[in-house]
Length: 248
Image (cartoon, rainbow, N blue to C red):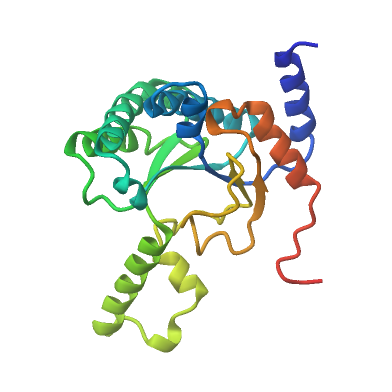
């Protein structure tokens, strides 16, 4: 049996059961992938873009409603200047090249994160694709870009504080629902499954509020080596778990 046949068989098996509505992925290991091959770190980022494209296709084939990809954190700005500059250029090119396929798949791109500090050309490219796909009704691809979980909470609490100050909200009326509505993900269901590649055992300031009861799946596979079969396997394991949400 070929790899493609095995992948197709696994996909069929997974689709025979209910699939999660929302899968989030911490895409980690691009730099290490390149270093192990004696290549510059940027080579790993180029391969990582290819993997992200493959994951969008795989998520669409699975029938997911939401796929969140952790593309660039607020902490990533502290990386070497040449690496950050290359990442921005890579993203600017990639975002434009993905538009035709997003449209073909009826997929919608949305962005989670702060807009300040992003190079103007990158911001324009992102805004263009977000606007062009806004009416699409298929898979929602959520790109966490210039994103930090604590920053998101700070922004939400500031927004709620302004409402209280303006007399539009009483402090005693602030609830989980009210806080959730103030987040970047206001109208998006919390992730059912969080995948992290590269084997690191941490969540790296990602969706801190939203993953309170999210199932975790961590693999030592580096992101450029992550395949559709890996995604299907993670979902298959998720399907075998019992989610109690704090109950017996």
